[in-house]
Image (cartoon, rainbow, N blue to C red):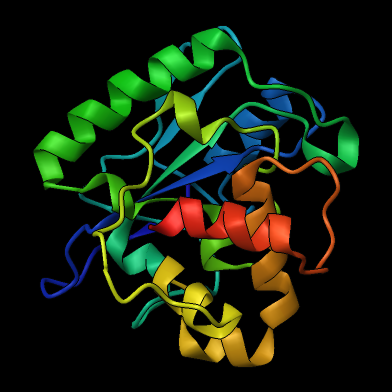
Length: 211
């Protein structure tokens, strides 16, 4: 199994939601527990809703890869990784099950209380690595969990760059991977057509998400 100790100055601030992206639960379970896979997570939730505690959340799992969010880099240092069984975009992406959402909410409530994590800091893998990752993807219904809540701001942002910044993308990602950031937002919004085009419908939906 792959893990590291957290540095004493690196405390848990975020929860990252993933999908397994593999052909079967068995393959995913073995990979997340394998010595040579160079990947791991803290929790795995099967399609039947069973929760597997892979690693103690006090330990650093290897689930996020290179990642950025706001001013943070390498989110493994600051986060808990939760994997949901789903074949993903490569092997047959499907809706997540009601049992998965039920178990996920139980887990999120427990972890949020234990580590004082706010709903706004429950993120998808594609939020923190928009240039590399799609998960949990557009079929994940954020309305069924502790949905992101942003502080209201009367000086509401107008430009797409400012909106992406308010959402939480790092300045580096906005500069280098602007189109990937837009794709990640569309997945969060549940769009079925995922491209980097911008129109008034997207702008209004994006405003509703972050207002």
